[in-house]
Structures are given as C-alpha cells and as structure tokens.
Length: 229
Image (cartoon, rainbow, N blue to C red; front, side, top):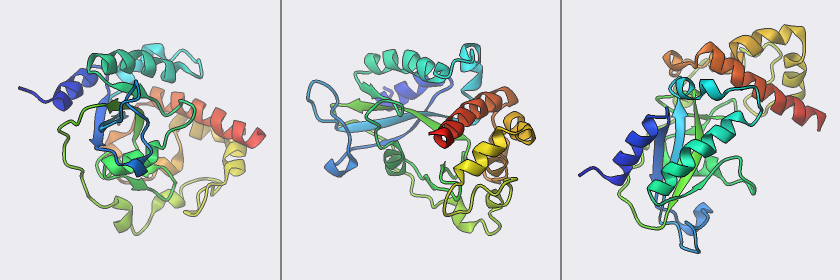
C-alpha cells in the first residue's frame, strides 16, 4: 500500500505541484498547530519546480495581482482537507517562516541573490503551501547535499544585472525598481531577471516565456511598491 506521502505526491502532480520534503517539528521550528489545538507532528511543504506549474495555471493568469495566490488556495485547500491536514500559505498573515522550514526539509540554502537555491532545481522553484498534520507520518529522509553555490567560482549571477543590484551582501531595491520602470527594463520584463537567468544550475528547467512575464509583472509590482513605500 502506498504511503500517504506518495498518495499526496500523485494527487498534487496532477496540478503541476510537487512535494518539497517534510519534517517532524520541534518547538524551535515555530510551526502552528494542526487545527483544533492539536500540535503539528508532521509538516510537508508543497511547491512547484521549473515549468511544471504553468500548463495548469496559465488559464487563470488573468492579470489580477492575486491570481496565483487565489488559484493556490482553491487548488491545495481541498486536497489538504482530503488528506486530513491544515493548510497554511506563504502569503497568510501573520507570515510564517517558510524559508526556515524549507531549509529544514530540503537541501536549499540562500544564494548570492538572497533567494533559496536547490541542487536540482536551481533558482527555478517556489513554495506554495505547508500541510500540517496532527499525526506522525512516515517522511522521506532529509537530503543533506551542500549548496551548489559553494563550488561556483565565477558566480555569474552577481555580474549579470545591468544595474548591479546584487552584491552578494544585499539587494539594491531602488536600482532594480528604477531600471524595471524604465524603457531599458523592458528586456528584463520580457525575458526575466538576468541575474537569476545567469545561474548555471538547472539551466534546462527555466520557466516558459509566458510564465516569466507573469512573474516579472508581479515582481515589478513588489519592488516598485517597496521603493514607493
């Protein structure tokens, strides 16, 4: 008989989503309860990698800034209920420590760009939800591979940005926002972030052009909003 983890993986794959590992929380992992006051004994992350999500979501990408969040809730919530889990999302408030959970569940580490990098997926991945279970589940062993950035001598991601927004020690939001808002920034808006694109890890897993444009539009709203705020 297939484990719950395997069954859940197959169900999510039908929507272009994938399981991103899990762990049995300890108090210092800052995991909410699994519902009705029951402690969470197993946390499983849900996300997407490479171009797999787009064929399932593309018809819902209607220009609404919350379109992906809405689709995520509508898709994952009934699956979580089916499998007896409470679902929390990265955009819920108060915000949950998804990056900490991810580094607990998978071999991801901060890249020089600040976003998490995976040995297989590179920078082409995201976390969409966490499923909280009140019972202890059988989970895959946590992968302990090191970050591919440790052996990347050239670090092309740090020299690819046309305005040098990434230094490896910080992110120059005003420089990035100003460039994306200019006519010269149309190249990044159409083709994606050059710094991210320069990463050699998982170079065959880039997102399709339409998905890149969708995410760049959302990213521009985010960085320009941060600059205006």
